[in-house]
Image 1: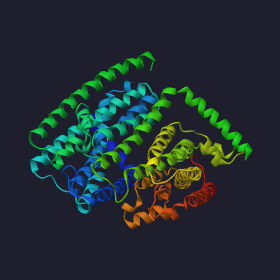
Image 2: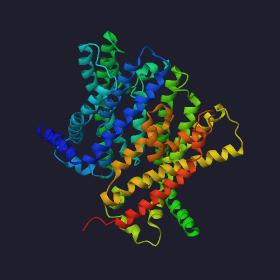
Image 3: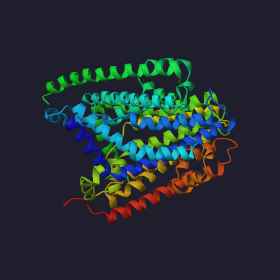
Image 4: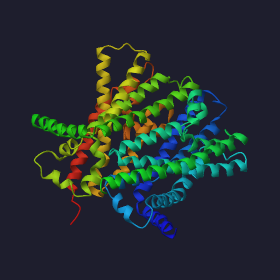
Length: 262
Length: 263
């Protein structure tokens, strides 16, 4: 365990070293918030509610979802590149489990990003953009729990996709595709209740809505009471399922490595 | 000029051979970009299921703006994608020096080095979206309108190119300017919606400082009756030419200031 904590710590330091990307990222998030704000302002210029959501609720949903989505992807890219350039063979000989190491690094990444990126930007949004707090403190606590589950699901899904790098070299394409599917189905762009009926039913059977929609819907009070607990329950199922799936696919991929002789 | 065209043809042939070698990856790239664009359009569709117009703009008008942006960007994505890599793939590893000793224009060589297959997905989606939106606009499509549309799209593409080239050039001084290029590129997100929904300051920025407004909204507004921007829209090709000249001038300055990395 100690060595993995060390990996997380080193990753945090790496972050502090690349400040150019940090500022680029911060600035881009600010821009995105502006686009979102003006877009929804225009949408609500001629009406007061959509599917029971007022402007406050909608903008709160969209902004929180945007932040959460940033935590949903993980170190898939690192894994994919390790696989592509063949370093995975060396990594596998080292005295740690590669996946666990990557997850430790990912936690380091996310903690740093939460403190340096999401927290100040979130505060800014809170002050300037009519973002509201959850209605009840129970909702807030459940949101935190659900958000962590969502991030877990996203991280494992990310690694799962990255393993496909054993079979393709177009990592950029893979990444864009994954991002598109996630922002599409997870409810990161717009609450799923606005989607057509068939789409909502379909997404019930996919892991994506567990990444963003469920936690943010709990935050904004779209999901409450039993409904909320059921949704969190399905998150737990997905979290376990993806964990197992990753192990299976990984051991499967490991056989492929041996076949090619490293 | 003819020599350069011949050369570009040869570069293209090599690139195409590489593409065909990895056919699965080609498909994956095209498909992924199409999916990405589709997600954006679907988002607009969902929102318009609940509203009839956005600040006076109809669904098909928004779609049209979106289509022009996508098609214009595809020109940039297919032919000029290498601009993204100037810092980390050329200057940092010292590979840029290789281009400088060849007897052709280094910018030409640098751009011809790569043909980005993934951009074709963007092109397909863009064309599909434009042709879906076209019949719903209050305009009769003759040869002239069509020609103007093509010119507008090409101009849009070159504005994307010029902006990226301008900021990529900063790499000559700071080794890798990718974070800046990426941040500026994100500004183009604004251009996907009518600029009239934004604050005046943002509109001004996107019209006169970093002219992303001319990559989608203004050209589209030319074809939308009563948009009030028909005159400004006609500036699009001029803006494209000016941006390209400015970017190329800046590139040449960067080239002169360039001192290689390494020992």
